[in-house]
Image 1: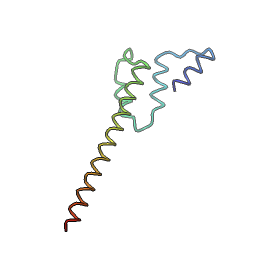
Image 2: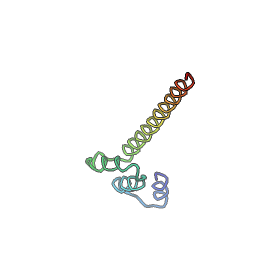
Image 3: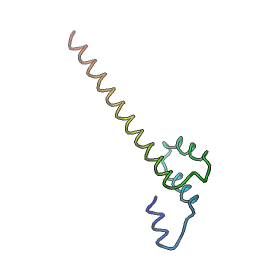
Image 4: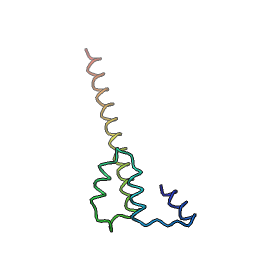
Length: 88
């Protein structure tokens, strides 16, 4: 999205910060709807492109970490099941 903004600037089109933020929010996948709703509830003066990119990166990182924890949890359960079954 930021590449599009830069291309538009190169073509002489200047987007306001509000338009940039709106375009970024609209470009997020449906799975980010919770983040979008939370951000839309904030004061517009607080919403900058940098802030939005940071929050989106934080959400992405949180999701990756949650996925790792679930995977580790499933691996630990599999080891526990294997151990209990092999002892029978």
